[in-house]
Image (cartoon, rainbow, N blue to C red; front, side, top):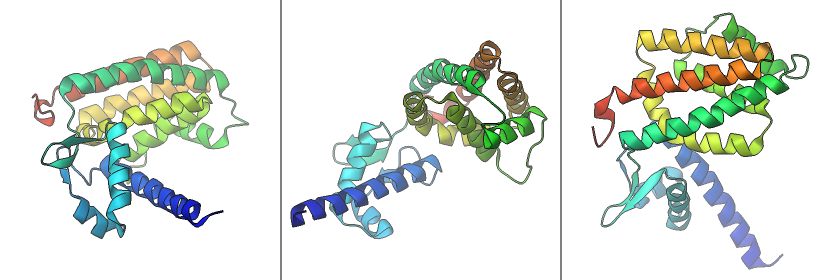
Length: 224
């Protein structure tokens, strides 16, 4: 292997790692929608040179996580209410399909971890010490794994990114928490019963209610 190839491989690894860390930071709300991502600050924070920072930001822009604005650089994308509603409509179809496939493929003896998660949720048992956002992520990820469709999983994960911060906001309401968990129970029971039609229907309804909930927070969106 040539020295040039070695440098490129190392650089690629650095970019990949930085890309993942920046994306996770956005998911966790450490960078707010509309916040400017300054290259010099990122190089100091992550201990890398500007080259990997610029490449990671370009990749985030390709995924729709950041926007490049003239004279301002990279900003964490702020989604309009219409954009978020469109994402939810796509999620309803894709995650409805994922839930249907999960119900079709589920076998308790072959999917031990997922079975434990679904049974706990179906029984209404919740860890009150954990944030709802973690519980929600565990539930939806279990369904994606059970769908056994890597392409579908990748598409859904990409769609989830701009919604995470908004989901955290929505999870603070007690009435929303109660209804969301009740809907999770219905989805889990359908999957455990190997009922694809019911699982897909319940997921579609669940995400429709989540979209309605977010649309009530006009202050979250730049067009609010």
